Image 1: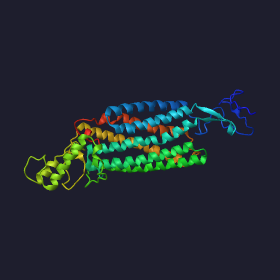
Image 2: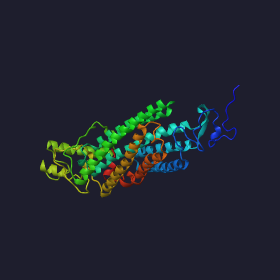
Image 3: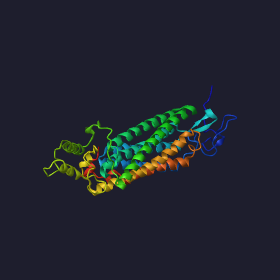
Image 4: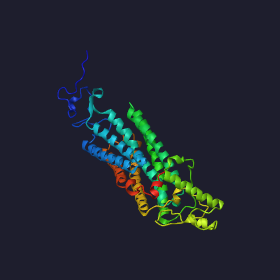
Length: 394
């Protein structure tokens, strides 16, 4: 008749290395619990601090998202911070949730469920935040000037968001595979899947940074594009706001009038052709806070924002939000480089077992990104007014 082993017999505790009851085996800890899943002791106070801050940012993004009445902020900024809160809460639980496992000579194992949660959630949560940057750019470009973008703003949004979703799914699959792996080989296989998702996200971010940099350069130097490409003309108008659809229909009628020689409704003259072009030339592009004309009647930007005037406050807000996207993208990009190097070494690498690097290059950078979009949230810098901000919501 076998008797179950009681790890607490004889004063056995995580701090007592004499609990090793298997002859000849090696007990991996001395004084402190050495968590086998992480390769280091999770610092209770550090995890608690991150949980507190991510809890505040999650609440803030929920409130701001509801106030702004822009659902995309809830689907990006809020979900991203919520994922970080869940992941760091799992690490906090793991810092004190241990159980005795006599099968390997007597070791104290961390909570496996918490370990699985923090792997799967922390790896893909930043993808939601980056998606917020992609969507924000699609709303910034119409305000600062569609003529500075060589691709239609909506096309940017669709391309980058779809790419971000793909990377998110791959990272989630890899995280689940790694966390549920029973052997080191299975765990490494999941890690490599995660690595593929992170690298794909890096590629999408690099493309976004190129587009962002090109737009900023053209805007700052006032170099309009000769033409603009619209990749998703099939995008359903039902997803746009009423004001956007009204402006879109008005612009189509104006363009149709130019093409057929009909005078634009904005024109007060009866002359055809030149006067019609001048009338449309009064359309305000935004950008530099002054009215500018189109670059000839042959230029088709396909943007409803050409006929929308924006206030100085909205233009200034768009500039601030653009700067916030640049800063947040930089933080997330550096974090993604770190995670790529970390995962490339496998689960026994030196980087993945360095808690300080994880706290600084993952937790701290993402926390800074979430705070960036609290202080520079669309509700603060781009209010929904009678001008173009409301109409810019596609």
